[in-house]
Image (tube, rainbow, N blue to C red; front, side):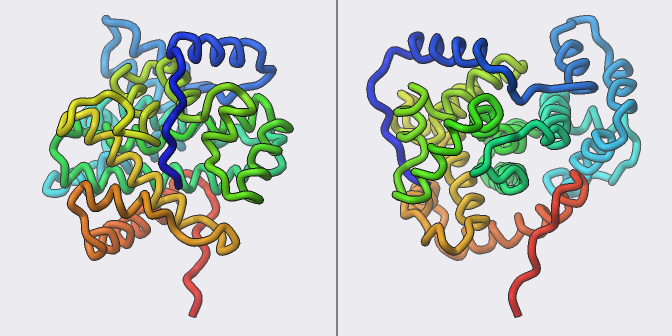
Length: 306
């Protein structure tokens, strides 16, 4: 993981480039089934919780995902529940929509034709980031319930969009990043005019994720460059997201990709986390991650050597 200082660009022009890219794309990661209906309900001020529950019930995997989330550790001290309506109320609609989006895209891997893009690793890393964010949310009270998990789960979806919409071009970008150790974001900017964080933020806004969270996704690689006030909530969220994403990427990287990034531990220090804190955080998150992989049907983590 690298700290990436973006070159000065007009944000409106960048969004325009992204819009043209999305319009020209023959294929994109997109919500399907229950996820589409949940996004529609979120835009309907008269929609009821019972309508939401009925939509979720049409998708057994999504039902399991929501109930699993409602019984997560962040709700410690609250009685465990298997009731879907209580689960939806406990988790919140924002998190339910994020789960639906992720579940629909996790299943939709048959169209992926980008040779250098590891689909299972991408979603495993995204889930690990989400779990790390969830644990960190218990330490930093600026998070709203479920918000941290949503950020972690969908913050990297721009990489999936590049791999889906421009598989050959993005495979070249990934190969260059692996061969030369160059920051992926800079190579994406050279190839497409924008990076996966910028692309993620536009996609998430289109899918109904609040603008504040989309802006945090945009600046996760450079929280200091986002113009956030020091000690502000957006600045803290962007920094925590940078830390969680970096820890997840390093934990799942194959040995040939080299050692860790100093940026991760610098960010940890800025968040007043020492090495022992980070070790405890990652160990707890790995335990939760194994449960989430089973829930989503993704391959399990390899067993530790020895």
